[in-house]
Image 1: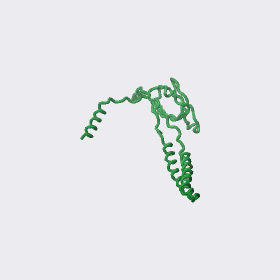
Image 2: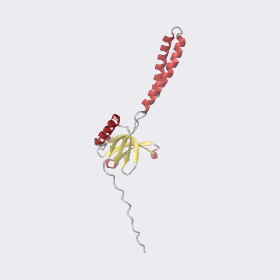
Image 3: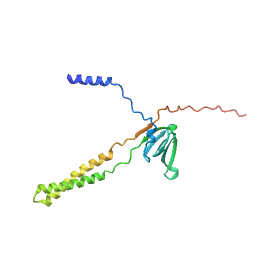
Image 4: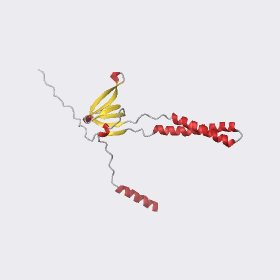
Amino acid sequence: MRMRRAIMMFVGLLLLVPELPAKTSADWSSVENLKWEAPVHMELRNGQEFSGRFDSADDRTLRIKVRDATQNGLSVLKEFPRAQVRIVEQLAGPRKDPYPYLRGGQVIGGVGGAIAGGVATGRAWPVGALFGGLGGLAAGTLVGGTVGVVAMGGNRHPKIVYESQERPPVARPPVKVQPSAVF
């Protein structure tokens, strides 16, 4: 009975708390402060999307390097007027390699297991060190592999750097032209 009352009071308190405003990203200076060669994805007001590497930005333009299919995949610098840019996202950087963590775990586990196995067996030092090393190697592989996978994963979501707060232009239907009579 007390638990139900406490839960109801907590829910009621949450309902009374005002909504927190979402963090806006309409500050163009955050685009200007991007690191050179940072991977970015942008969308223009007309719906076109471009992915490439950030080159520079100022008050009026955004410059990114994109791969051009007509240039055999070479990077080409493209400029976009700020008024046409709707969203700029910074993509996640390159993933970390998990194998150094795996190898480190194997070495540390193997050496630690060999020392522990050699000390624990006393007189049968080579056999104890061998089996201890193999056991430590297996444990080190598990731990190092897990650390490597966790380090590789991380937060891989793109970060919205800029989003225009202006309303997009309203699409107008095409004007119908009356055909002129030819006599």
